[in-house]
Length: 244
Image (cartoon, rainbow, N blue to C red; front, top):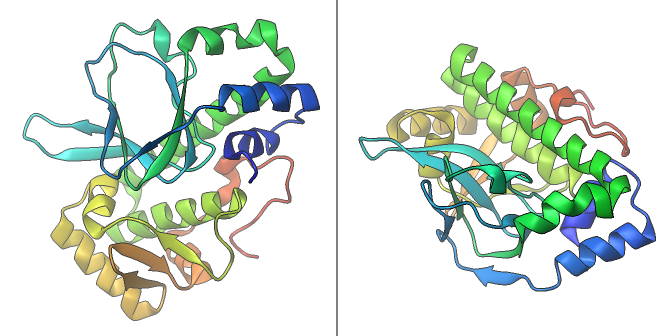
C-alpha cells in the first residue's frame, strides 16, 4: 500500500527514490489509535510531529464555556506543525475522529530536514502554504458566508481534498463524522446545522448514513457554496475545478 505521506508530498514536488526511502523510514513505526483519542492537548509541551497515515483527525480548541471549535481536519498524508518544537506549549489540541494510524516524528528530525534532505523542503513549504490557504478560506466562511454556504463550502473542500489524495471518487464522498462534528467545525449550533443539512438533503446535494454525511451531488454542492478549489493549490496533478 502506498505511503499516504509520500503521496501527498509527491503532489507538490518531485520526490526522488532516496527521498522516498527517507520518508518511508520516518514512517516505519506507526501506531494505531481509536476514534476520539487526544494525541496531544492544548498546554502540553510540544513534542513530535504527528503524521496521519490512515483515518481522520482534527485540530481543535476548547472555549472557557466548554464548547469546541474544530480548526481543521486532518486526512491521510497530513502532518501537524513541522516547527512546533520551537513553541513553549501547544496552543491547540489534536485528536482522532476515527480509528487512525499515526506516526510520530521527533521534532529534531524535522528541524534537521533542510540540511539532510534539501530537495524535500519545497514540498513541505508547499503543504504549509496550502494549510494557510485553507485557514483563509475558513475565515472568509465564518465572516461572510451564510450558514448554508458555509456548510456547503466546507464539505466541498473536504471532498476535493479526499479526491486529491485518492480516497474518494466522483461518485463516493463519505464524511466519517456526525452533524455535531460538522457544527463544531463551522461555528454553528447542532440544531442550526441540522436545519442546514435537511435543506441540503432536500435539494439532493447531501445524504445521511450511520454517523456519516454523504455528498450525493458534488457539482450542486459546489454551486451552492460558490466553491473554487484554487486555494488548495494542487500543482503536479491535473487541477480539478468545481465546474468539471
